[in-house]
Image 1 (cartoon, rainbow, N blue to C red):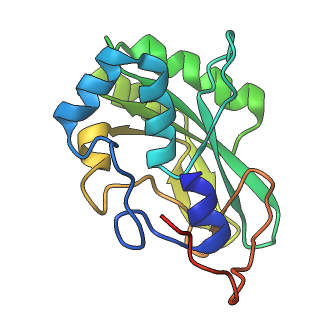
Image 2: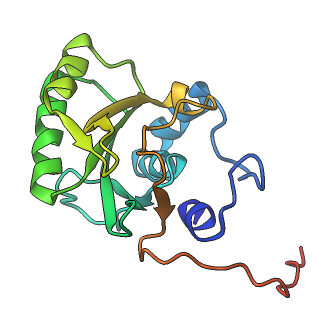
Image 3: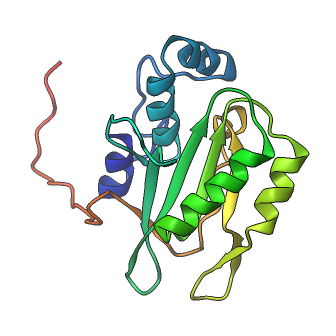
Length: 182
């Protein structure tokens, strides 16, 4: 829902609307993970504007996808993986294979705990995504929930790209749409 509001209508979370009950800090994010790892995963993917994967076992290392169009109008995606527990460099190596297998433009690794130096080293070895304008962006990026909750610490996108919904369609807001009665 959050990704559709952003991608289809251009609405920004915490600016145009707020979601009651969502974690607003690292402590409440930890509590959500303890109560329901799956709900934590769904929330974390939504936090970065992604579309969570359907609730099924065997997600093959993909917890969600962030769709965007490049400067040529081609639909691309970044696959997301969310981890709330123990972190090791092998998780990044495994995720790199997922990015390659899915032929994704980029991969976004979202974690609750602080990543190790070895994880950052592994991510750097994956290489870069080069936008049509020639800008190089790390193909595998790692972000901590605490930093994502702070404004301005989102994943890096190529300049000029626009987020899209899972369908890739940009929807127009109906000016005559009535207000929701609460």
